[in-house]
Image (cartoon, rainbow, N blue to C red; front, side, top):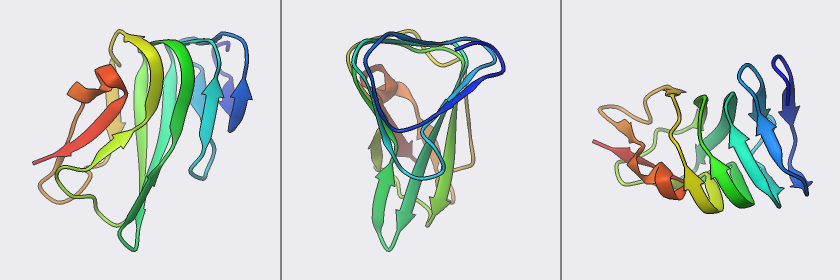
Length: 129
């Protein structure tokens, strides 16, 4: 994906995907799942949705990836009620991971809470006090 482009979709992609610096991968305006049955390199922006409504938490999921290389900025869009400490959101499911996001852009998950990004090495973003 070239600089200035945005891929917004759910579904399946069979080939390798590279999100270059200045490009954006987003699963849309609603909670969704994208399966990339190959390698995925995130050098640009990755936008994910996390929502809590009536106590039920849902989130975007990028799965099926053989190798996922983190980079760029992870944007977390929050909707609904505040989250609680201990909540864990599986955002990425891959056979193997490498790298780190250069930045995380998001509001606070709840009063007095913050994001714990240590679990992103296995695809999981957590809420901590």
